[in-house]
Amino acid sequence: MALLLDTSTLPEQDRADAVRTALSSQLQPVAVSVAEPARARISHWQLGPGVQLIHNVAGPHRLTCTSRHLHSGTPERLSLGLPVSGAVRMRHRDMPFGDRVGELQLTDLTSPYDFHVEDVSVVEAVFVDYDRLGLPVEAVRGAVPRLAASPMYELLRRHLLQLPGALEKLQPGTATALLGASTVELVRALIASVSAPDGPWLRDVSAGTLFTRLTAYIARHQREPDLGATRLAAEHGVSVRAVYAAFAERGEQLSEWVISGRLRGAHRELAESPAATVASIAQSWGFANARHFARRFRAEYGISPTEWQRGR
Image 1 (cartoon, rainbow, N blue to C red):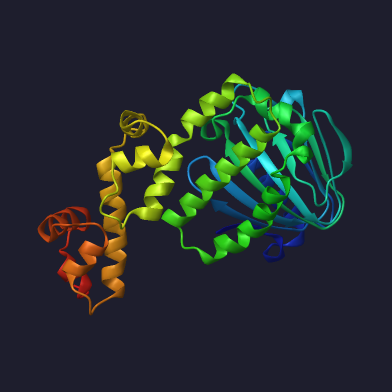
Image 2: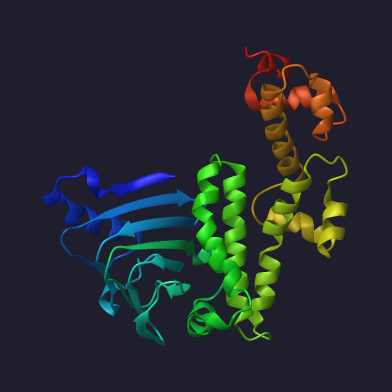
C-alpha cells in the first residue's frame, strides 16, 4: 500500500491544494473543489498493470468532469466504486443525481460525470484501464444504468468491501497480481451479466481471458509435475494449440512461465526450510531432475540452491 495523502500531517493552509492535486492526479483532467476545512487520507494499491485500488476517507469535495475536460489524451479507463459511509451523490450518463452510499457505481471515465461528497465519507474504487479490461466503451456505458439488476451485484459489493483488508495482509508480488487479475475478471463478468447475451464482444472477451484463466490455474497447481499444455487444454476446454497461442500472444512461453513460478516457490521454501534437502524441495515443486533445478536456480538467482539455503 502507498499512502498518497494524509492532510493531518500538513499545515492547514496547504491542505485544500494537496487534496485537489492528489485527486486530480489519480483520475484525469477534472475540476476539483474542496470545502474547508480540507481533510483526506488517500491510500493506493497497484494490483498489476492497468489496475489500482483507491481507499479515500475525505471531507466534502466535488469532482466534475465535463466535455471540455475530455480529449484525445484522456486516460481510457473505468472505475467501479463503492461509497461505504457518509453522504455521496453521483450523476453519470443515465443515472439520476441521487444518494449513492452503499451502492456500486460503475463510471466510464471517458464521459462526463459529477461526483459530490457532501460530508466526511469513505469511498473505495477500483480503476481499470480499458486495454486491460478488454471491453468496448459501449458495453460499459450500457451497463451503467442496469448494474443493480446483475446477480453478481452483491458479490462485487462484498469484494470491494473486503479488498483493502485482504491487501493489507499480502506482500506485494504474485498473490497481489493474481488478486488484481481476479478483480478485473469479476468486473468484466459484472458488465457481461447485464449485457445482451448475443453481443459479439462477449465472444471476443471469452477468448481474450484465456491467458488469465490459464495463468491463474498454473499458480494453483504449479507443484504438480504433469502441469503442461495437454492438461491445461483439457481443463479449459480448448485445444493444445490454443494454449500455446494464448502465451505467444503475450510474448510468453508456457514452459518458461511454469518454471519461473516453480523457481520462485522453491526459492522461498529453501529460505524457510533449512533442514530440508534441496532435492526434496526441488521435487516438491515439480522438478524431476535435481541437476536441472540447480542449473536453472543459479541462472535465475546467481547463487546455488545450497548456498541460498545456508544463507550465503
